[in-house]
Image 1 (cartoon, chains in turn yellow, cyan):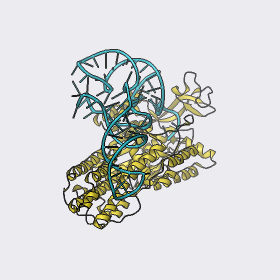
Image 2 (spheres, rainbow, N blue to C red):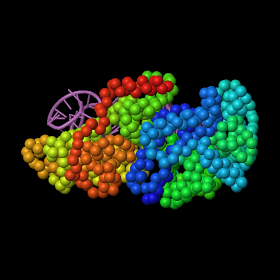
Image 3 (cartoon, chains in turn brown, yellow):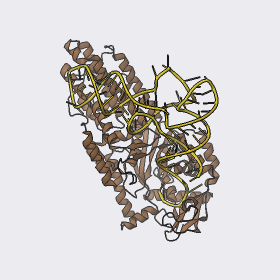
Image 4 (cartoon, rainbow, N blue to C red):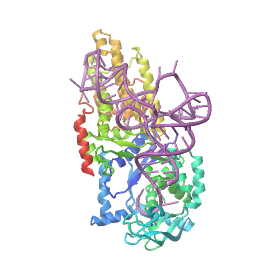
Length: 529
RNA sequence: GGCUGCGUAGCUCAGUUGGUUUAGAGCGACCGGUUCAUACCCGGUAGGCCGGGGGUUCAAGUCCCUCCGCAGCUACCA
């Protein structure tokens, strides 16, 4: 196991507000980062914004702003969202940062000198009124502009190209040698079949039709193609080719660092094909893993004619808490597959897992400890009742499975484990019937039951910590457990909790009225469109 | 059109390399139990020609072919 982890989200494009899909990706990454920190690794977590390109230039213009003003404003919204979700990134990089621009220019010059980038002409279908180039498939058989439907002409412009063709064999070899480089594998197959097999062309890496980008120093009027610009953020953020490259040495060059890019399926091509090629051309190592997650799709029962609905995560966080939103995002969709956001599921997930199972278990446990043991958690007595052994066995299994799943980036599966332990604990109460033990003055068994419940709550809360940011601390407070025990270290042995003074507080999560809240979220979805 | 997936209980989904005689989970529905608890928790029941058709096999939700439906990608939008 590597000592260090460098983990990144894509840098999002600030042409519009971020929606719950972006939040999904970032929360997922954040949870992985937090887990690894807890597991004792040195973690560096990067996110940011991809601010150049034609679309930004256009959107700024129609908003009557300079591109810089426009992105400054939009990026503010990014920060707000990540703050609300309490994303634990170590750096937020913007492609308009001077250090990033400098690195992009140095890389471009380097590859130009090396011969990996050359000047040529880009030829394609051009629509004069729209000032845009289109591909064969886009203009179709009739050669019409897909935007304005007018005829296009064959035209060419000067452009720099990256010799992608020369790196195809290297890439295929790399795929073969590292079967987990792109996960899930179906994404790799897609890349090979769609782009490589039909013959990959060299990539046009400069643009002249607009100016909002990183200027190419060698040639007036050319800016770097946004995707090349954007991908470089992963190393410019670490100070590659700058005076201060300490982070780069530590988190990229060091063999003990695992590098994971988390990304959505829609941008696999750039991450899985061109980025590895560029890195190879620069003589740098490749990331360990390109983790392609599914998309969170929106669904609106009634108005399917209006295109995809967009949910703004901010009001959700404000109404239901950061824990609710983070838990939902992490729990609802399984790795690799797409998922669907529905108001019903959001409310249900919250009520069932967090309110009924988790919060309620704490509540009933604390009440019983207060009632039967004057609020002092009994010291762990070993296995006393006939149900204790099985329960402890399960706790150990849960911890094991949790770790294994996280090591394989199976976040959803990992987080289900502590919930299983919570459910088992609820059942354990029914099995042992503490109220009968109390009536019969069977203090020994009663103590064991309370001890096991407290310990299971403790274990589950530690395991839920990467996803839930508030509830575990609140639970610790109510059980009188010091914060320093909130660490993986202490889970190695069962029964560390005991002797603490509990203090009943508010429920961890308030129960939601389903119909009311579903309606609230539905309204939210409508207003947003 | 091409490529990659998907289509399994009312809903959301699991189902490793084909094989524990009755295909699973959660939620919802129904019935019962319990009282420590946020009308919560526990147990049970109902509900599936595993998209249609064909094939391979001793054996297919799982492999092959085909058809239907849906989604994403298809190279200067990022």
